[in-house]
Length: 408
Image 1 (cartoon, rainbow, N blue to C red):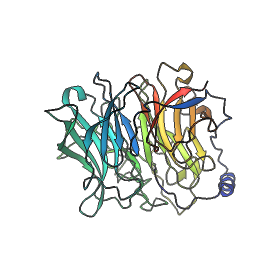
Image 2 (spheres, helix red, strand yellow):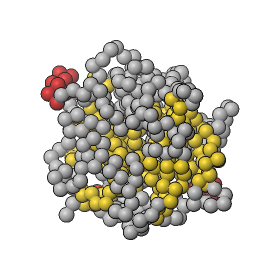
Image 3 (cartoon, rainbow, N blue to C red):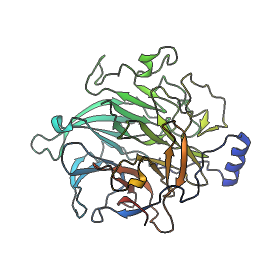
Image 4 (cartoon, rainbow, N blue to C red):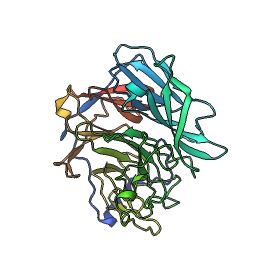
């Protein structure tokens, strides 16, 4: 996601190719067709270094956590006048590889029973020995001070054999309402899906994984849910790695679960022309690298998986933005006019859109830009956050966290 893009085409070329392919785009409607929002610094006394994730445990506390890409997790009180943070975990240095612009400490998820077991999980980039790796580890809080983590408690649950390139790492981890851990992985990097991973369920790349962290099995420190695709249907998903939940994704930087209905929404970063919003389902195929968004990907011949093909609910062309950051379905109480809208943004331009789904059909009823860029700060949107009340925030690479509020 946080990358310098290669081979960016001109707007004119994008428009011409879209017309040639003849596939209608799900484009934003005029501003004002959905409720408008503003951004306001939520904790003006706090500033972070490349914040990439916002997380919190459901433990009855008022503590929030921010992940810094360099390898720290900082904790702070949710009161708006707070001016201090406390280091929860610091694994900066040799453990976390920051060689690439998209590498580092990228994801954080608290165990659903964190209050009882003190376990949490992180996703980070590593270099060992001399090879790029993606790592998902479990840590525990310190027995002497539960407000901090014990760095020595690390247990590696999953890691790649080798990351071919230093980009398209995915890096988002979240627990679903089913209690399983979901992990996003990019297509292995570079451009044009060089390993053809997008449509190949046999490897982990270009997919979202789903594992059971509570029931180790078959010699691994995790188990495989019984309804994962490879176990559920050995014909359609023949040969798939057992961890793979869905495929056809170029680089899902952020995905989240709707706290009302439990469905998973993701922003998948495109290559040259299109950024897309997907609703993730078990065994779904989201098209990459046969498609980019809803549009045929004009490169070398690709083999398409047998997995059911699912089109994005929304997309936008690179004339509007170039690197999607997935957000949340708004379920807070303070701003009822935003209820049910999936709010997402673009890292490079700072623009924010919302999509309203039509009757849970996977189709968009309305899509519109909802942030007035003339009256709001232009923020490189690295992530969105959601607090315990369901209110939403934007994490900017300027180091600040912004609250999403209705425009006056």
